Length: 458
Image 1 (tube, rainbow, N blue to C red):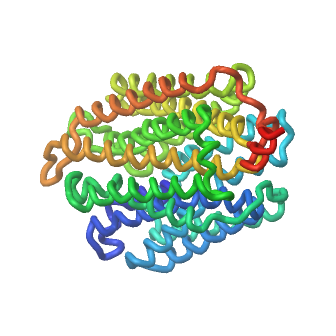
Image 2: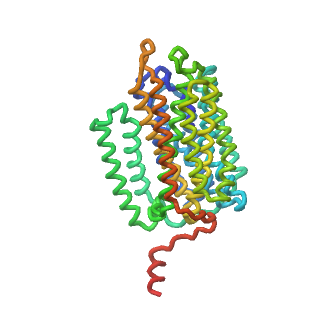
Image 3: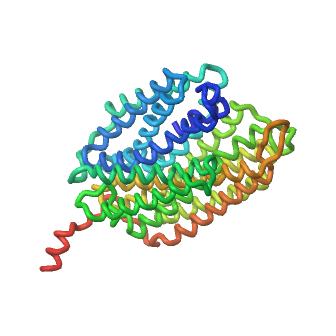
């Protein structure tokens, strides 16, 4: 779903009979919905059953796909893409179900593969979407996604166990609304700041509103018995530093997704473009998805042997090395294939480690909510990457006939920024406690306030 409409981006204004600024909401709506849905779906899964919420998420994805398949207008398309974005909650929910039902010896590799599927799906989705968009009616993309979503829903019901809810209490409606409003304000400012102007009252107002709303939301979460997000658990150094590293890893990951396709598709007459078609570009990026899939089990083994902090640190370093290679290899098609695979390998290592670090520091009752928050941190990183990379590519341009295109130095600058981000993630990783993470099954639940007082009185 993340890469489904990327091949359509240049044509969306014509297809939907609207302006380019309005058409961008087809991308933004999915981003916002996914950001809000991941922590909310995680908490709902902990409280009411993870498989129930998984099935609900995939059914909403199916409904959203059908809405998009049956329209050529902007408003229904944005609604459909919003419903598709809600499906992003399946990643943290799937990881947490694995903790409930898999034997310990299989948990690490399974979680690593599930976590890396965030990148693998995008890598495979892009060429598939490109082929369909180039050779068939664009609505076929959404008919296909509806069919895949329906198939996944049936398989969830037939194959995946339904573990009992692990958490108690009530769902925090106020917390969910507060987090949603705060995130929407923040991500709108990040994703639309380039269009609105970074110093415009609208952008600054959105940033300011996000700070105020999220501050009030944090105050609320610390004062209720059953919060949407347990901020005290989130403040544990292992969880906090992992989430911060996830933001920066997400930033570094997404830069390649934005730069590599443009570099491949620009005409050769520019002197640095590689002149590939939309379909060829998608196929050339498939090996990066295969590399991520191949490396994720190795990351799980490294985590088992040396601890997940080591895997996360190694992944960040490999990503930075990949961007260093990009500066030297961006002049050829095979060079792009090589550095994209190296960067994806680093992402596979890092993504394999993040859930292990999170689950090694939170009680089982909070697994889905904690993984949902970690997935949200990655989304914030990718959104910020989109904004920063977009500014670089939009301001460092040259003319190719009537069209302004990014210069070679713009691509190089983007690679340098992303590589520096990966190095920053490695430094953040060093702040994670050096001891090996607990086994997820061994993490005790935190005592409640009543239990703490009783213990103290004894």
